[in-house]
Length: 215
Image (tube, helix red, strand yellow):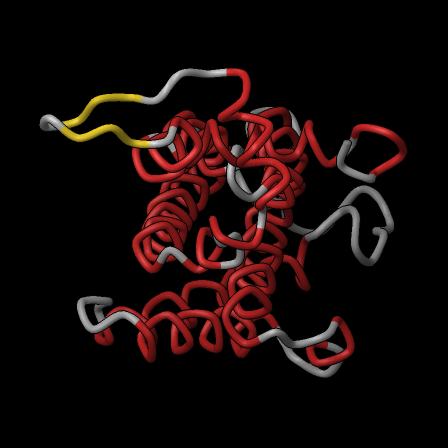
């Protein structure tokens, strides 16, 4: 899942909570040959976790909102939320993603090692080829969904330049103005507009000073 990991690393600079998804990838990749059922379970869990993050970032739902959701509903809800706010998001794929997740749940219920515990030897186990297929499809879906979030700019919109006056002044005091098209631009504004990831990273470090209070 190298492509999805790269995307998480990039987006994680803006939204660090998405980096928590990497723990699922560790279990997906680490078990696909020796314990393929564990790998498939982790694929299902990754789709659910990503969907909850997306829906919460768009809708602002609390954790208990998802309490009675099955995996299919959780994934469908996230894709519907993306479709509602992004005109170009493909509505036709929403049901496909939800159905695929439901199939992973069925396999998990039948053969999963972790969630339910099993009496060994099991009557039936998935083979590595099935796990590989599940991983590849899961990665494609996750990339599509996460790119939708990045396209929508929901996380970026949570940080507004004008609401961080102390930090902007801190940057401007330490750096000269930048000339763009014969116009002088404050360093802080240029950084925000041209390299938001770097702006966010430095803002986080600034806010951690003095026990969380900017100095």
